Length: 177
Image (cartoon, rainbow, N blue to C red):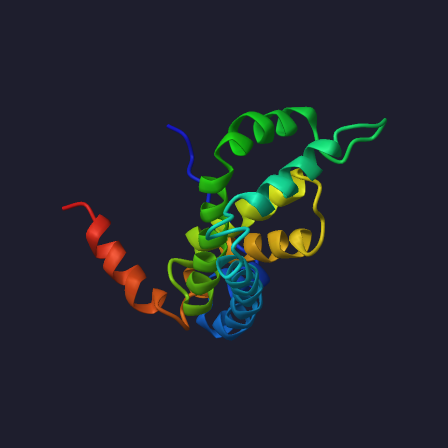
C-alpha cells in the first residue's frame, strides 16, 4: 500500500490564496484590472467602428495590422496565429467585434463586482494573451500577470464582492449527495 504524503503550503502562499485578510489586496487588484477592462470595453461599445453601423471596421484594421507583423526575420506575430486571424476572424469581423467589445466590458464589470473572480480573470487573461499573440504589447503582460494572480487566489479574491454570496451557493449546488 502506498504511503500518503501531505504537501504543506508556505505561510506566504496560504496568506495570499486562502486568508480572508488578503481580500483587501485582491480587491485593489480587481479594481485596477477591472477598470482597465471597463475603459477598453466602454470605448469600443460607444464606437461605431466596433459596435454599430460600421461594426468590424476597427477590428479589421487591427487584424490586418497583426497579419502584416508576420514579415521579417523576427516576426511579432506567428504565422499560425496570423492564419487564424485571416481565416477565422476576418471573415466574421462584425461578430468578433461585438464579442471583443462586449467581452471586455463584461470582464471589467465581473472583476469590479467580484463575480466568479477566477473564471472572469481567466477570460481576461485569455483576451490579453490573444492581444499579445496579435503583436500588441501595451499593458497586456501586466494584466495577464495580475489575472493569473487573481485566478490563483480565487477563494479570497472575490470575498469582498458578490463571490461572498455566490461561491457558497455554488458549493451547495455542486455537492454530491
